Image: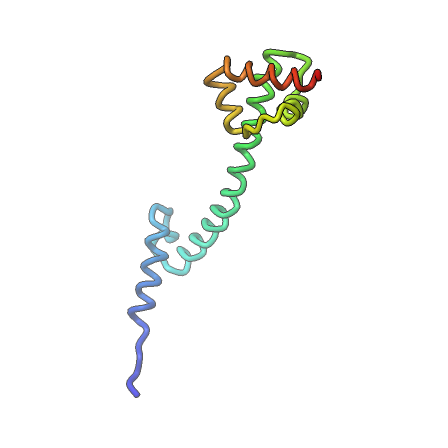
Length: 121
Protein backbone atom coordinates (compact mmCIF):
# COMPACT_ATOMS: atom_id res chain seq x y z
CA UNK A 1 0.00 0.00 0.00
CA UNK A 2 1.28 3.45 -0.85
CA UNK A 3 2.08 6.09 1.72
CA UNK A 4 -0.38 8.95 2.17
CA UNK A 5 0.98 12.34 3.07
CA UNK A 6 -1.37 14.84 4.70
CA UNK A 7 0.36 18.00 3.60
CA UNK A 8 -2.39 19.19 1.28
CA UNK A 9 -5.15 18.82 3.86
CA UNK A 10 -3.03 20.35 6.62
CA UNK A 11 -2.07 23.28 4.42
CA UNK A 12 -5.72 23.90 3.53
CA UNK A 13 -6.77 23.79 7.19
CA UNK A 14 -3.98 26.16 8.20
CA UNK A 15 -4.83 28.51 5.33
CA UNK A 16 -8.49 28.59 6.43
CA UNK A 17 -7.52 29.62 9.97
CA UNK A 18 -4.99 32.22 8.79
CA UNK A 19 -7.61 33.67 6.46
CA UNK A 20 -10.09 33.94 9.36
CA UNK A 21 -7.41 35.77 11.39
CA UNK A 22 -6.94 38.43 8.73
CA UNK A 23 -6.67 41.86 10.28
CA UNK A 24 -5.43 40.63 13.65
CA UNK A 25 -2.34 42.20 15.23
CA UNK A 26 1.14 40.66 15.27
CA UNK A 27 1.60 36.90 15.25
CA UNK A 28 -2.12 36.38 15.72
CA UNK A 29 -2.56 36.88 11.98
CA UNK A 30 0.42 34.93 10.64
CA UNK A 31 1.33 32.03 12.95
CA UNK A 32 -1.06 29.08 12.83
CA UNK A 33 -0.88 28.10 16.49
CA UNK A 34 -1.53 31.61 17.79
CA UNK A 35 -4.04 32.42 15.04
CA UNK A 36 -6.07 29.30 15.87
CA UNK A 37 -6.35 30.38 19.51
CA UNK A 38 -7.36 33.90 18.48
CA UNK A 39 -9.93 32.66 15.95
CA UNK A 40 -11.41 30.19 18.45
CA UNK A 41 -11.77 32.92 21.04
CA UNK A 42 -13.29 35.28 18.47
CA UNK A 43 -15.84 32.61 17.55
CA UNK A 44 -16.74 32.19 21.23
CA UNK A 45 -17.34 35.93 21.51
CA UNK A 46 -19.37 35.95 18.29
CA UNK A 47 -21.62 33.14 19.53
CA UNK A 48 -22.15 34.80 22.91
CA UNK A 49 -22.78 38.22 21.44
CA UNK A 50 -25.41 37.02 18.96
CA UNK A 51 -27.52 36.22 22.02
CA UNK A 52 -26.56 39.48 23.73
CA UNK A 53 -27.55 41.53 20.68
CA UNK A 54 -31.10 40.17 20.88
CA UNK A 55 -31.18 40.96 24.59
CA UNK A 56 -29.88 44.49 24.08
CA UNK A 57 -32.32 45.32 21.30
CA UNK A 58 -35.28 44.06 23.33
CA UNK A 59 -34.18 46.27 26.24
CA UNK A 60 -33.83 49.25 23.88
CA UNK A 61 -37.31 48.70 22.44
CA UNK A 62 -38.81 48.49 25.93
CA UNK A 63 -37.09 51.75 26.95
CA UNK A 64 -38.36 53.53 23.84
CA UNK A 65 -41.91 52.28 24.34
CA UNK A 66 -41.86 53.26 28.01
CA UNK A 67 -40.56 56.75 27.18
CA UNK A 68 -43.24 57.24 24.51
CA UNK A 69 -46.02 56.01 26.78
CA UNK A 70 -44.96 58.25 29.66
CA UNK A 71 -44.55 61.28 27.40
CA UNK A 72 -48.26 61.05 26.54
CA UNK A 73 -49.59 59.90 29.91
CA UNK A 74 -47.55 60.19 33.12
CA UNK A 75 -49.73 57.71 35.01
CA UNK A 76 -49.42 54.92 32.43
CA UNK A 77 -46.43 52.63 32.84
CA UNK A 78 -44.88 50.25 30.33
CA UNK A 79 -46.23 47.13 32.02
CA UNK A 80 -49.77 48.50 32.26
CA UNK A 81 -49.56 49.54 28.60
CA UNK A 82 -48.53 46.02 27.54
CA UNK A 83 -51.31 44.59 29.72
CA UNK A 84 -53.79 46.94 28.04
CA UNK A 85 -52.60 45.80 24.61
CA UNK A 86 -53.21 42.16 25.48
CA UNK A 87 -56.65 42.98 26.93
CA UNK A 88 -57.49 44.90 23.75
CA UNK A 89 -56.38 41.94 21.65
CA UNK A 90 -53.66 43.90 19.87
CA UNK A 91 -50.75 41.65 18.95
CA UNK A 92 -47.90 43.95 17.95
CA UNK A 93 -44.36 43.07 18.96
CA UNK A 94 -42.05 45.41 20.81
CA UNK A 95 -39.86 46.05 17.77
CA UNK A 96 -42.79 47.42 15.77
CA UNK A 97 -44.17 49.36 18.75
CA UNK A 98 -40.79 51.05 19.31
CA UNK A 99 -40.55 51.90 15.61
CA UNK A 100 -44.06 53.37 15.67
CA UNK A 101 -43.22 55.37 18.78
CA UNK A 102 -40.20 56.93 17.08
CA UNK A 103 -41.38 57.36 13.48
CA UNK A 104 -45.21 57.40 13.62
CA UNK A 105 -46.23 59.04 16.90
CA UNK A 106 -49.86 59.52 15.81
CA UNK A 107 -50.30 55.80 15.14
CA UNK A 108 -48.63 54.99 18.46
CA UNK A 109 -50.99 57.32 20.31
CA UNK A 110 -53.98 55.62 18.65
CA UNK A 111 -52.72 52.22 19.81
CA UNK A 112 -52.10 53.65 23.27
CA UNK A 113 -55.67 54.99 23.49
CA UNK A 114 -57.03 51.53 22.64
CA UNK A 115 -54.86 50.00 25.35
CA UNK A 116 -56.09 52.58 27.88
CA UNK A 117 -59.71 51.93 26.92
CA UNK A 118 -59.18 48.18 27.43
CA UNK A 119 -57.66 48.83 30.85
CA UNK A 120 -60.55 51.08 31.87
CA UNK A 121 -63.20 48.57 30.80
